Length: 356
Image (cartoon, rainbow, N blue to C red; front, side, top):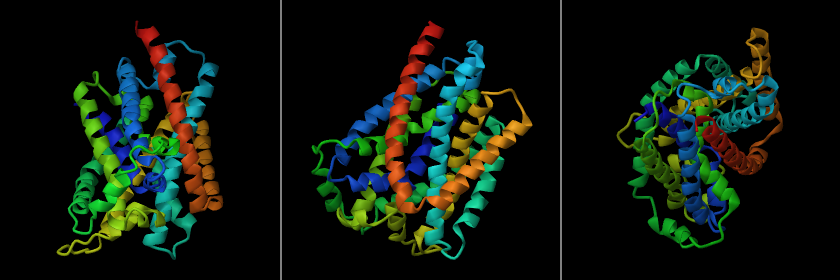
């Protein structure tokens, strides 16, 4: 099993729990979210398998190296690389703004939003400049330290006496409601970690075996059930919609009686600080490396890209409130899914011709 591939997909699944996906799924729980999740699982999994299999035909090469070998002129790759960079950058930006808003609301309401954002932004900008293998090593350390503890908290949620399965079953009765495109797009995001192979394929050695994908499928099923249904089980089929961040409120419903820190929400947020930092760093590293692939190596141009990242983040933080960001994210999910399908389809056709 290739653990690096697993890390990339697992990272997306973990960040999937805390930000906007639960809110979107719960909002459409009576309007096709259940069927949307059931459609998103084979759709997201199929895209994952097809793209991963195709890019594994170019071992230890990212998109910049693959298209360089293919002899494509630099102007030919500027547009597709720019579009992919924009999507990956915005993916990290949404996670960053969302988590900083969570910290401000639940940990330190007195601290100015921009100051709190600048702390995370500094760390992210330092990490994305590292070589790809070092970013992966750092991700491995963060996952190794935090994932078992997050898994324990999720286990506590599943076994809690306050989890009402009747509420979950009530939502399950809407199984045959017309599927919602917004729910499909949001649920499929759990499998989208494979897109980071665009750059991180540089450190993937050998071909991916079927065991890798079976593990991803099982984790995806567990992740989507946890993301969607656990908040409903705690807060009710109607009450869950009232929360802006359903899983944060769910974590606040849990207690560790014999722990030095009884309220789970503080442990949950501490663990997710590292996860969020690495999620944003991985997405922005992909965007940064793709943009670097469109021009000859230049330190000034690299700094210019970092300045653009910083300015875009600060501008969005100033002008986007939480409600507006949530609405934008819903439409962004749909655009992301459409572009993923198009990119995977085009790369599949191109790769088959090149390796035939």
